[in-house]
Every structure is written in structure tokens, then in C-alpha cells.
Length: 194
Length: 395
Image (cartoon, rainbow over all chains, first blue to last red; front, side, top):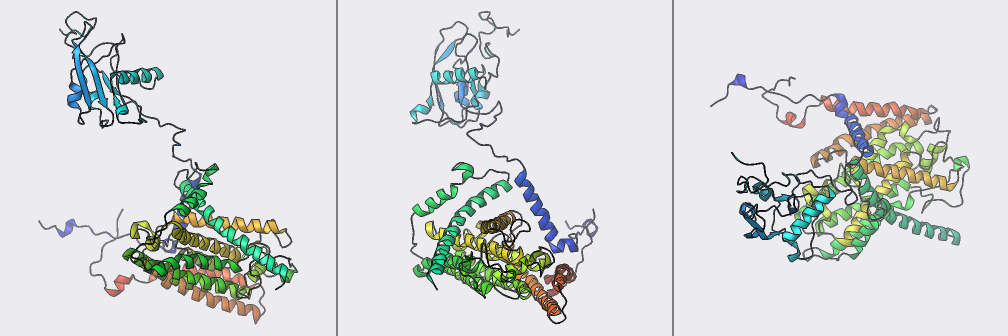
């Protein structure tokens, strides 16, 4: 629909004065700004002498958490491998040797090269078994080396919790709500449902 | 020419060529470091202490790269262009003093003069002529590359260089008339001799307008920002040196950096007193103080080149040409008229130190030109007057 003439506001660029037409004052001001930057501190981080300061929820290499007794927390429910968009998690479940859970992963392989480090597995896990750490400088000499199996993932856990850089961000020791034996009275957990 | 003079000249030539090639490497390092510091970065700092060996690494890279001769280029011209570029840029340095020179009026005649060719009375004209031939390098490089973008880059660059040679030469005429000679050593002498100037003052204080115009023209001659339209990457990929790689590109770039060194020296000599510095390097100071002062001045100007690169926006080509032809050339013409009048005041009417009049005249011309530019309506309005008149912006 046509616009009313009274709704239109015409504007004009501000007029140039003598000082602006000379261009020299503006250039000197610009030179001052540039010179000032020369004496300000540099913002570059000198890697690798200075390592970057990563937030705690940085999505790096995965690890499998252990519980209070040192057993692997994972109950092989396949939620992480179902959620994974890159299909890089491969689990083989087996009956658990411990009484407080039904299954445990016999093998748990993540292909770190296929992984897109999106963190969906971490979000999907009901027992907080898989987490992404702040380890970012992962290298390997062969493709086979980069397929992390359960031992390697647990080793990542051991290393990162010892150095204190990646504390376990979940309820430590207790199983999460997905464990169906939580309210059966066989465990020591106090998360019994009423 | 007797044996000693010949020996001195050959040694000086060898020294100067070594210095210029070395300066090209140093300038690469300095450019990268200064550009980084101005952008809150560090610059190269891995290759040596403060990254000083970075240019060595770059030089090695240029030497070891594969020398290509593309199939679609005009072979003779393609190979000729970098040669001309480097040769003429180095040739222009033949009359530039870089240290102690003779000052006959004060009785100072050193045995060895720090010029390759001393006492050339056409000093500045020779430099001007040699740098004019560098246009050929650009045109041939752009043409031989057989490539639309290089061609446009070469065309723009040659038009730019040729247009800015005129203000460059004309602004110096003011200095030449006042000093009485084109010889660069006489120009230094006039600034050093306390009889002609009241204190230790240099030409820049008596004549700031030619200094400004010469500086602008030098930026344009060296294809440096804000006039680097011929070689900017956003517009023309690489401009006239797109098709060049390895050593041929290095030669073109060395020619450009040598040009920067030569014009820095010229600015120091013509306006900033050459080797003179009030207390540190007077006429009777030792030669190394004079060389040192020259080096510091040259370094300051080269750093200024690099500082301006990251400060001022690039000019559009029509703005560039408009600046040369519509602004700088009329200003230099009016200024030249004033200089002629002032020099006559000294000669005919015996008005001593009349050259001091040039200082207010310079400022008046500068401000007057800006004021005149404000009075004139814009180009497109003169062609077709506007029918709707917008209101003033509010707020």
C-alpha cells in the first residue's frame, strides 16, 4: 500500500566543515589510534608455551567414569550409541559380575576419528558414565590407534581425575536413576522411589 | 679518474647494493613486526630472536621455489619487467648521499664522500628520471601476464605513478629555487648553514606544504597505502604481479622496497636536514654520527610508511586521480608562484630571510584549498541539479 508523504522523513548527511575537508586532522587522529595500539599489550596467546584456558564443559576426548569402588559405571544401555550422530560408539554388553546392576560393557569402543565431539552421548547417558574432557590436543600415528577401547577410556579417566583438571561433574559413586535395581533394596543408594 | 677514486667508487657501489638488498629483507621483517604490533599481535617471533631470521627464511623460500614460465605469457616482456623494476630502483640510488658530504661554504671537504656519484649537479632530476622508468616495469608486467586482472592492475598503477610524478617534481621546485641547485648535497648544505636559516631549522619548518605534498606523492610512487589499488588483493588478486612467483616476484617486491628506501632518504635529505641533527651531528662531527643520523631518519620514515598503511583507507581509483590532478597539482602551481615571488624578494630587494614568509604562505594555501573545495558544488550536482531537497538531519 502506498506510503503517506507525511510518514517519510528525509535526512541528509551532516555537512563537512573546514577541519574535515582538510583531512589532515582526521588522519592525525587515526595515526594516534594506530600508535596507541602499538604500545598496548598483545592479545596473542603464545601456544605452546601458554596453554589455553578452557572452560570446564569443553568437549574434548571422552572418558568412562568409575564409581566409588573403582568399577566402570556404564550399564551398557546403548543410549549413547543410539544418540550418537556419527555412529562411532560400539558396545558389546555382558551380564554384570556385580550384584547391583544387570549389565556391564564387555567392550566399549569409540572411534575418536569419526566422532564429531558434539556431546550427545554425554547428554544421553542416564548413569553419567561417559563424559567429554578438556583434552584437546589428541594425536595418533595410525587409524587403529585412534579407536579407543574401554581400557583406554578408563585410562583417560584415571589421568584426568588425578591431575585435577577435569573433576567428575556428576553424582560420584551412586548410580543414576536408570538403574532399575536402585529401589530394590539390594543397593546402598538412597535414591529409592516411593 | 685516478685509481683511488675508482676504488672508492667501486667499494661504495658494492656497499650500497649490499645495503639495499639487505634492507629489502629487513623491511619484510619490519613490515610484518610493525603490522603485527599495530594489530595487537606479536608478529614473527619463532625463527630467530624476535623473528629476525624470518626474512632469511623468506629469502630461502623465494630462491628454492620452482621458477615457472607460464605458457600464455609474452616471454620477453614477462622476463624483462622484474629486471627493469629492480634495476631502475637501484639506479636511482646513485646520487643519494647517505652520510658525510662536502659543505664548501663552511669549508668542510671530507676526503671520502658518502655518495656513489658526488657533485652531480642534476642530482634530484636524475632520481626523478630513473624512478620514472620504473613505470615500464609495472606496465610490462601487467601486459605480459596476459590476464585481465593483471592488465587492469598494470594500467591503474602506471596511471597512478605517472600522475603523481608531477606533484612530486613540482613540489621540490620550491626547495630547489630556495637552495639554488638541484644537487642534493647543496640542498643539505643550505639546511646546515646557519647563515641561511636563523637556527638549526630544516626545510620542513620553512616549507611544510611541499613536504606534505612530496610525502603524499612518494606514497603513491611506491604503490603503498593508501594508494595500493594496483596490488590490493581484494580487488585484483595480485594486480600486476599475479602471474609472478619465486625470484621474479622477489625482484618486483625488492624493487618496491628499494623505492621506499630511496624516497625515505629523499625526504630526509630534502626536508629534514640530511645528516644534520642539532647537537649530535653538526658539520664537524665524525662520519659515523652522520651515517647513524641518516639511518635513524630513514628508519623513522620507513616506519611511518608502514604505520600509514594500517591507518588510512585505500583510495578508489577516481578519488586517487582526482587527488593528483585536481588538488595536488594546482596547489603546487600556486605554491611555486609564491616561492618565485619570495626568492625575488631576497634577490632583488635584499630582504634577508624572506624565505620565512613561505611558512604562513604554505598554511594559507592548504587551508585556502580546503575552503575553496567546500565552496564548490559537487561534481554530480553541477551536471544535474537535484530536484528534491532533503531536510537537515536531526538528532
